[in-house]
Length: 360
Image (cartoon, rainbow, N blue to C red):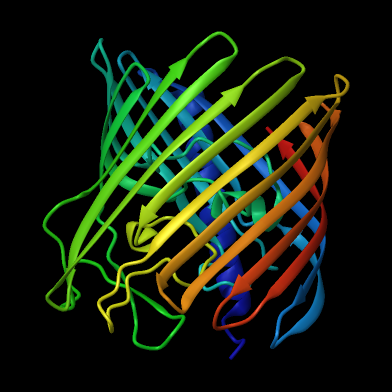
């Protein structure tokens, strides 16, 4: 079973070295384009405690975060691009352990706007908080509007973004709690249109208003699965303090591709029932000193699909970002999750962590 472990690790190291050398070579030798190489090492030390009707467990987490990265930004006249590789450590037991493509795109500035082609964050991505739990992901799936990085064609004009994205084709299996991801070639899922996402920002003096919306459709076992998401947010800057708030709603949120932590945010292919999701967040922060930033926030998410299928989760966190030297900081944080589920029962989770980050 383990006979390929060392060759595999050597193979990954070789790929990483080749990628780094290629990026460095471009930055040093290119005549037509400018390149800016970057890297971010993110390490977590955490104590994670679960208490559910079925499990009562606590564990230590000590290792690289899965969103550590290396890459480069390129520019040549009206053209620009980015390549970013994600790095997972040997402590990560996921099937995707190792290297993976986070972003790869090219963009053309045509004067009045920009045309982007490739894989990157969708227009929904605009973080309102700096939570570090779960590899900087907890708030993204507990109040933020987030549908990952996807292949797309996007047009940006000023603060307006419109993206046509690879369609999402997820469906709830008859077995409760499992999700099947179907793509082109899956006979149960048929797509005819790309997923659509848009955003628009109105920057004012000390306030920015954000609007988000999107639609996705596919056919699953002859049934149309429609999903949409719409949201509104306010970001403030009362230097040295800030308060951010966001609220959004969705039909079949997970089928659209949204990151959620509720059990009933999916279309039920067995009963042909749509789901409704409501989510939001509130974050407040204060720059206490030149090297310390304090932040606290709460994220909320609830989903409902039938009279007896409803659940919700509330997440609370508090943290302090402490700058050690330039580009090196740590973030002590405590996060608490409170779950209520009509079928699975109530549960809670507490995480105490320190995130260590060095950016180059």
